[in-house]
Image 1: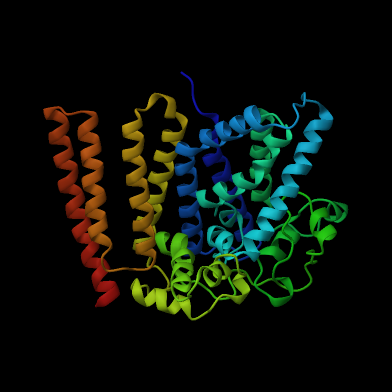
Image 2 (image 1 turned 60 degrees about the horizontal axis):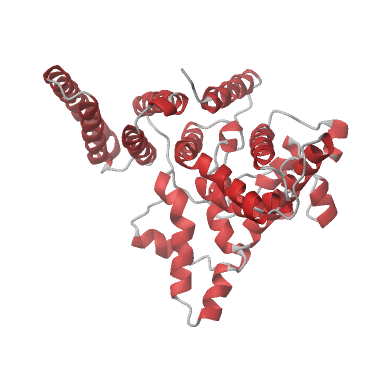
Amino acid sequence: MSINIFAFAVPFFLFFIGLEYIIGRKYRKNIHHFNESIANLNVGVAERLIDLFTASSFYFFYDYLHRHFALFHFAPSLLLWLALILGTDLLWYWYHRLGHEVNLFWAAHIVHHQSEDFNYTTGTRITILQAVVRTAFWSVLPIIGFPPAMISTVLVIHGLYPFFTHTQLIGNLGILEYLLVTPSHHRVHHASNDIYLDKNYGDMFIIWDKLFGTFAKETVQPQYGLTKSLDSYSFLWQHFHYFIELGMAIRQQRGIGNKLKIILGSPADFDPTIRPKAEKVFWIKSIKQSTPTKLKTYVLIQMAITMGVLFGLLLFEKHIPFGFQVAVAIIILLTLINIGAILEQRRWVFYLEYLRLVGVSLTLWCMSPTPISIIFIAYVIALSFIYFQSLKSYYLQLMYR
């Protein structure tokens, strides 16, 4: 049976996240916070999930460009591999830099910087929107003449390396600090301190920052997150709030020229009064408070099941009907939205629970529409409903007395 080996990225990353957590606890470094870590993993799960339906399209896009527009046709060689790695990283630098300097690109990239923690869970905080923007920059590579297979291989390595720079447990790496992007360099990049803003854009090599004047050395303790905290664990709001704010700012302007100035302008000049207006329109309230143990347990169970389902879906994707893949993907996305709502302790969360339960039941029934399966599903629904009612009573009493 053929399997998708990239599915093992899920347990691979989880292993190092767990290892970092254990080491941090051992040395009494409080670098993981429950709500922040879960919110980070939610974003990472969504990216892996959407990647299931989009990853191959990126390769075909590079292949199409190479076949129709390549200026040269290079034969693979060691020198070409080195040139491709450097070229990929240089394009990343400019993609990343513009992602911080242009509002439209920042709307896609801001999700990666919302967490006020800095650890390996933050490294998973990547969105499919970023992948689309990066692909637009990397489309230069097949046009130059680099083979699509080589590009795809390098991009896998290029996507793996930065995960390990998202940690506070690794200090100065000596001579490597002069060439590679290290955890120290990337801590600077994620910091909201004034002296660290818009610094260290490199992904693998720090040489581009030193060459283009955006390098900063870690000298004082970084404060992580946005300069103005989002104060939300909402899965949807984290992904789309800046697009909404951007749209509201554009509507306030008259004339195409002024609207383009907003779209292509700098986030540093963006009107800070827009966000409170957007939060009011969409009934977003800043609720960042501790999560009770019982709810933490429930969230952890949900995350564990979601991770397991995601792993199985990715591993056996070639043997799973497309319709079933879509149904499971929708259920997982509902779960991620639901988990964010639980972290924010929203009152409407249980309506989403019931919707998700209906989705699971319909999916199971479609896969096996027999009398026995119907009886089993009805039994599961009844038990789940009783459990949800019990949890709902506890939840409402705890939150609203």
